[in-house]
Image (tube, rainbow over all chains, first blue to last red; front, side, top):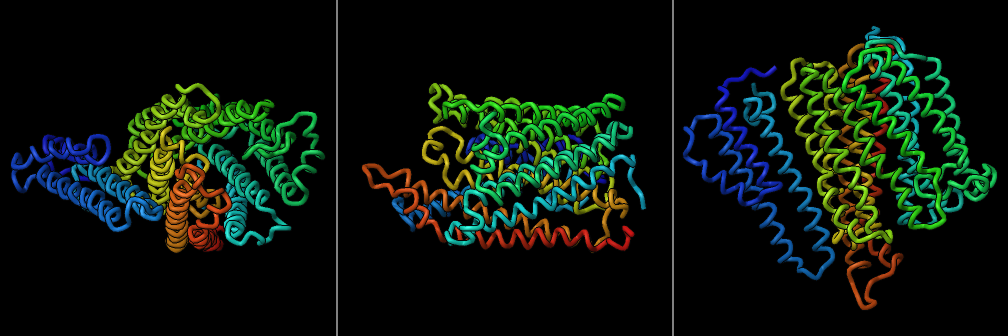
Length: 122
Length: 462
């Protein structure tokens, strides 16, 4: 069903980037993001790897903001000593974290297949 | 239009139909019980809470077993490339299981549990009275007989046909299901020991051998709807079941934390439980990957949606929500709270209810003679049912999670006698229970919508 537009090397580079992105959201936070940052300027702007790198960095920055800043804000506003604060922080954190992980998994699968984000795109 | 490859596959039909009827019953009793959480007197005389709970959970187990059996009867002949060994035996076993199951549920509802224990002769071979395994001993013996006959039928079919990885994984899971159920007959007087072996049934079913059954059914569906090479899907299946067994078997340790077992179980249980989300994570990766690399556009879009939904919801419910409270230092505070209920709801729906609904979605159009897939209209209704039920289950889980966190905060964390007692805590959680009940009503609407899809193609069936 999918027609690959990119050569094997480009797909491999994009796949590695997507994998680091997923690792940053799961087993190896922060360190993986630093690895992603070291890859900036290593690819031409129009390349497949650059697209995935760009997406990965934006995704992980959004995740950091949504998970750390918003959770921190909830704690700041609600206070540590309120049960309801923890109700909101924990349920919010788990749900949003999982949503970002699923997005990163989807991007890894798309990179493996030589695709960009959109599902219908070939 | 008959699109069945083997006519004996049609024995799956009554299993699927009866499974769906029991599923509807399970949801009704769930709603009754959900309302009893906040309106304690609701139907209290006719259906006491403990009975409603027993019927809710037992119906779940029985309909999933019917679903697994139907799936096996549909899938194995096609995989083995031969007719089922004995379609007659499959039908006879269906009626035995259906009658025994119905009588057992009626027994729960019509007579006090102690009377049911007495009239079924529990005193001669006591196995009753334990959560999820409340069935009278005679019903348990019936389940074993049905399972043996079922395994014989499926096993003989595989033996005389093609042996595929999917068949082998499925039969391994089904044999495991039967073997681990035997622990339900062991009922030691020591309550800690009793609980320990009770988990051999409950945990090793849902976090062990049932994952093999789920993996096999998902692999079968993915091969059919994506057209991806069998070899690729089989390699993924090997990886997933290996991870499931490595993590799941010793992961049983997370149930031994507070059962008067040696302290090392807290380490074993925590470490292996932390690995338990991995097979579900791999399932998401695998399902997304196969659908993304599909080589054909299967007309049954609803089955594709169910397959992807199963992988995602199983990861959420069994993987993420399981990990949430599985480490010993966390579980010290959370065990037996509504967090467990949140995990239980989403895991059972995501992993097992949805995989059965996936195979039903794929198989039913063929079994009913509609063709490769239902009409567009029927599929749209089915997909509405999917989204309503799935989104409702997400909200049920979130509300129960909220209730659980607050319960831990009020009842478990405070020291020096400041902690609220159980019932006082429950009063504080009522807003979450009302919200859960509302989400439950949406789930019921979703289920009714889902069932309506079978009415659309009635003319095509005739």
